[in-house]
Length: 255
Ligand code: SAH
Image 1 (cartoon, rainbow, N blue to C red):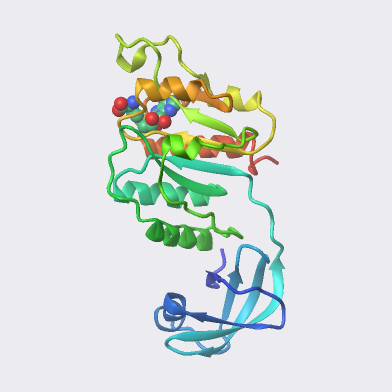
Image 2: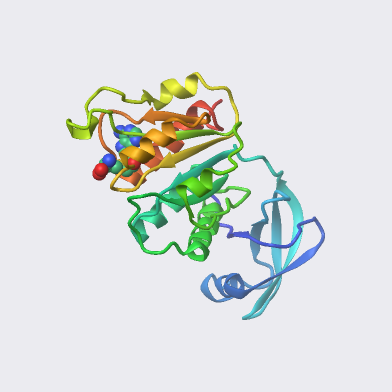
């Protein structure tokens, strides 16, 4: 555990150069953390790895930071997107924070038939993503895209990207949760039969997907419907569980 503050910054990074940090981050460093000349920080920008650095000047609106050596090289993030139907504000925040911690490459809110949420504030979610990336030692910040209708988001889909559709229901409309018939393959079994490659996980809203959405999704050539066990999970739990299992079987949790 390192106590040295770690910041995501915009400028290019190279040893021996000096960058300027302004806005909220300058305020955070000089006022909140009370750091000044000579204090150590670490910086990353999503492209150039991570650098050890020292504050050379600290003002209220701008902090100058002198870059010393590169401490980590940039590594590629596994090509996994999270697509999820936005939830209530605090639950959406939770999903974004956990998705960043769990190493997604991109976050794409999608509006489904039963999506029932306040408007999605992508700028605010982007800030949550930056904070989570700073805290979790990631070297990049996954972009949070503008919310799109589900079918619009799937238009022009590159078919090499497997869309992992978390589908809790069976097909029997007369039974609770659609009974046992037509249940999807468990996620771990599906992933073990899949080659490594780009993927996206799709999680529905609290009200689930409609029958029409399920049928249409299952008919798409790049979609694999999967189950996440015998219990119905809240959407945010389903997102965290599915991301963790993908990282363990197809992602960077492997040895
Ligand atoms: N259909 C339910 C619950 C939806 S749960 C209802 O009508 O209330 C929210 C989302 O989490 C689902 O759309 C699905 O994507 C995912 N999910 C939850 N439990 C799951 C499970 N056991 N298997 C697969 N996906 C699940």
